Length: 195
Length: 232
Image (cartoon, rainbow over all chains, first blue to last red; front, side, top):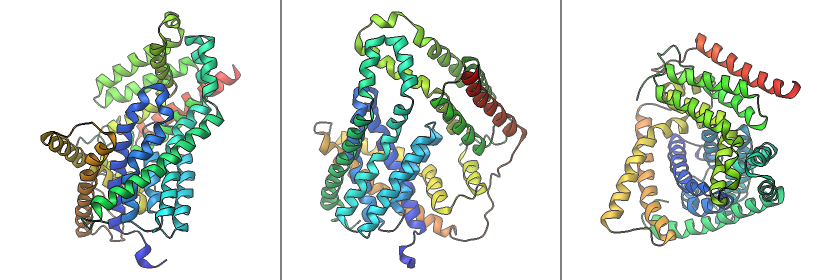
């Protein structure tokens, strides 16, 4: 690895700063999760909104492992705020795939960066995956509270095939976000000479 | 920034992180209600002795409400929208212990001790520097965010089209963040952050009796609770 491909302090600071921006925007978007059904499309919306942030980041730091570190900091933060280890493990797996995709495009190509962001964006599905694992316990509690019919309806909603749809939505949202990000980068940041 | 590390009842950040992980195990397997109350009381005890009396009482009251929730029979006949919101409370009930433990971690740890505990477990610099920067950047980010909202209000830009709203907020936010990140890295460079020697920290991290007691109690509750509900 040549020395200019290594992460320097400047890049590490940029990772920290962009994680904060990403995390705050993520929480802002997360407010729609308050309405129960909408949290199934939350990953898609998140991808569209945060596309600009991550695309700018990828344009600024074209080095190995930059996206990986940016990506595992958010699950790490969520883990320390009380999510289970599932979010962390799931996040690491997703980030390895995203990092490999970026490597395939030599960190510069838009096509591979776009695919990498699509994959990157699925990390947030990890928090929904937790729900799938606690399903039995959750249904047991809701039968007590809501009655049999409601729990049956819920059981049909939370399934692995439906989860695959959420993943697909997250990926497509990520791709859409990447295109929006590219347009905004071209309109504002390239003119200002920041990329 | 308050410094808690002098308080003999405050476990160090590593302990708090480890216990958050342990409490995470209660999400997948429910533990017995008596053990749950034990966990609530321990968490409240730590909150109370770190000067957060309000949080300590709130913890007990909220858990009390949540634990009677599934048994309330009146809810069955209410409107389905109200039911949907109550379902969220059930999710909160399942994740209650890890969330509260995480809240304890965030509220009672100061930045200095978090950074020195990252040294202690020999976290690579590529992770520890971004985390330290995050803590430094959060307050200035809040301030800049307020400024952007103010500037938008002055120009009369509201929330009409969601896509252009994203552009109006995101572009200045990213510009400012990139500039601040350049400033921070210059400041860090002048303070010789790349010097590869061992660094002294202003706030050292200590292992005290409370760390052992707290970990042991949580371990007892989680392991005991799991075994109890499985075999008895």
